[in-house]
Image (tube, rainbow, N blue to C red; front, side):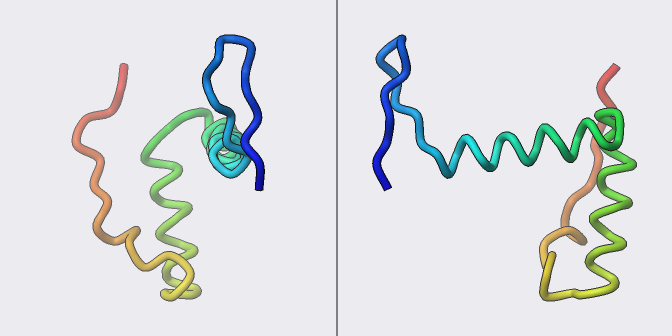
Length: 65
């Protein structure tokens, strides 16, 4: 997979960009509320523990204002 150059001479990695895009979609789906996102991920973990085996280690320390 070839990296492309951005206009400001920084490299653009397609895998990183896809990961970021999926993250933006997920956070927008829950109005950027970390508790809602975490609850959703924990539901996935309960259904299929192998699919998301690290969710149980995530804790919300402080909600952003």
